Image (cartoon, rainbow, N blue to C red; front, side, top):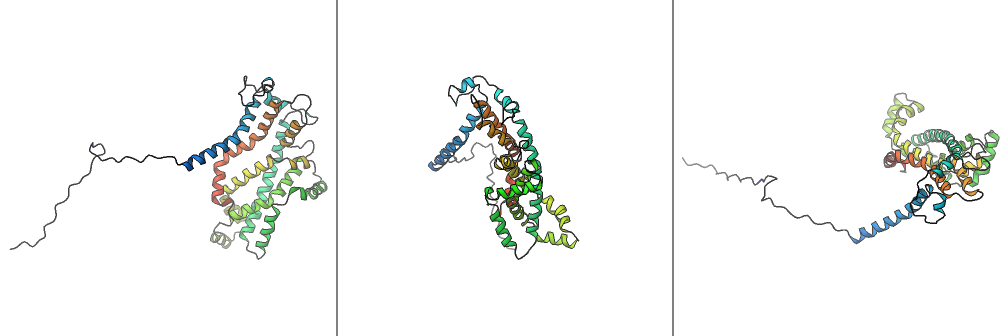
Length: 314
């Protein structure tokens, strides 16, 4: 009987080589070369970094120098003797106007202004942004346009009406006046930021909450607010930087006992008698700038996450 089965080809031997085999073929890697364009970009970035870092370097090293070394004129030289005398004098003894109690008074005034400003501005703008995002009305587009335009109105235009308002309210020259003006000035832009963020919340989720007898405030408190962590960090950093570094609102609406740290710094630097203590001025400038920088370095990662999640989308 004839065998009609087709012979199968013999299996090919596997050519697997162990990783440690010496006859393994190795291909040389192509050497990465830095292109002329990359060199130009790195050079430009280095020059830009030096442009911004050199003044900061002079500011820091001068604050630790003694006045005898500062008079030599070598502004880039490191201190011969590192001393905290300028820092101590700026914090405890520097004169601002007729008071010589240092920057610590202005620091605590800034803290007293900052806390109510954050609470009022963030809480009110979060609610208004949520309302604009969830309520579909015909005039919403026109209202958002005027709200956007109000964010760019110069403060000097509405300064006198705001002074009249705070005087009639009986809070002019107090911490609450400064906090209220900061809240009013930042309401348009913060409302737009919250509105753009809440606009990305799925409408099906809100409709389901409404069907389950969820009221306006209950939906906001139990659904929307727990989803607002990233945007809250973004707005918090923006407000801390804006309120802490403000000078015009503080000097206009703050009385003698409610002047923020920036006003005290300006009085120290611009009003002086005798020899100008540059180490004290530099230390005072650093003391004023350190708090918002610390906040940004602590929350900077969350700031980027909030922006990526839609904080400035529109």
